[in-house]
View 1: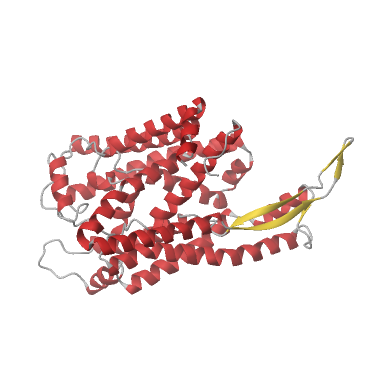
View 2 (view 1 turned 90 degrees about the vertical axis):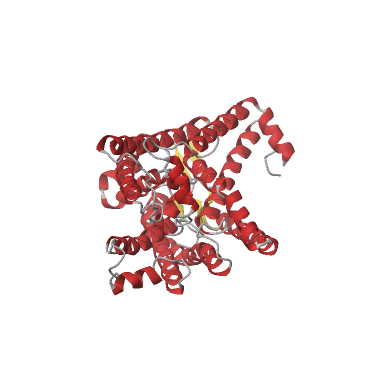
Length: 437
C-alpha cells in the first residue's frame, strides 16, 4: 500500500493533482477555526464547554461542516446548502419538464443545471445564515448559553455576519468545484469526507476518557465490522444482462454485444438519512418555538411529549420512526431517480433486450420488479447502519455523532472507495500497478 502511494506521488501529473487537493483541504480546515466578524470566540468556547449542544438537526449539520457550525466560523454553513440545492434541483426534474429536458441534453444541459444549483446554493446559504444568526443572537444555538455570542447586536454587525457566512458557502462551493476540475475525486464529496474525518480523533478520545479501554476496543471492533459491512453492500449490485442485436450501418455490422445494467443494492446513498433527519427535526423545532421562555410557565403537554419521544435519540419510539422514515425515503428517492420506462425505451431504441424478456413495456415491468425487491435490503441496511449511533447513545452514553455508524461511515467509505478508483484508473493509464492490488 505504501509503495503504491509512493508510485502515485512519483507520477508528476498525479502528484500535482494530489498536492492541489491536499492544499484545498488544508485551506478548508483552516477556515473552520476562523470566527465570523462580530462573534466573540471566547464566549463561543465557553458555551461549547457547557456541553449543551448535542442532538437535533444542527448537530447533524455541524457534522457536515467539520465543527464549523458550532464554532460560528466563516465556514459555519459548510457544504449543506450545496447538498440541499443539488437534491432540490434533482427532485425538480420530476416536476418541471424543462429540467428533465436539460438533463437529457448532455453536457450543455448539465452545465445549465449546475448553474441553477449554484444560484440556489447562494439563496439557501443566505437563508441559513439568517437563521443561524437569529439562533446565535437568542442563545438557542449553543443550548441557551448565558454569555452573548454576538456582543455588538446591531444591524451593521448582523448584516456583516450574514454576508460573511453566505460568502463562505460560495467559497466552499468554488473550492469543491476546483478539486473536481484540477484535483483528484469529487470535490464536494472530499470536503464532506475531511469534515467528518476531522471529528474522529476527538470522538474516539472522548470514548477512551469517559468509558475506558475495554469500551474503546469494543467500539473499534464494531467500527471494523461496520466498515466491512458498508464496503460489502456499497459494492454489491444486481447485474441484469442485456444483449444488442446485430444491425447494418452502411457496410459495417454493429451490435451483437452483451453487457449488463448494474443496479446497486443501495442506489439512494445517504439521501434518505438526510431526509429522515430533517423531517424528525421539524417537531422539535415547533416545540422549541412553543416553549415559554420566562422559566416559570410550564410548557404544554404536547410539547413535553415531543421533547420526550421525538428529540432525544435514546427513545425507542424515536428509533422506530427514524427507521421507518429511512425505509420510506429510500423507496421514494429510488423511484424518482431510476425510471424503468426510460431505460426500457432507450434499450429498445438501440436494439437492446434482456434475454427472455420482450422489449418495451415488459422490459420496464421486469426492471420495476427487480428494483422493488433489491431496494428492500438496501433500505433495511441504511436503517440499521443509521441506528448504530442511537444504540451507542443508549449503551455507552455516546453522542449522536458516534463515529462508526450512520451518515459518517456511509459517506467516508463511499467517498474513499470512489477516490481510490479514480487514482487507480490514473495509475493504470500510465502503465503502473493500481493503488490496490
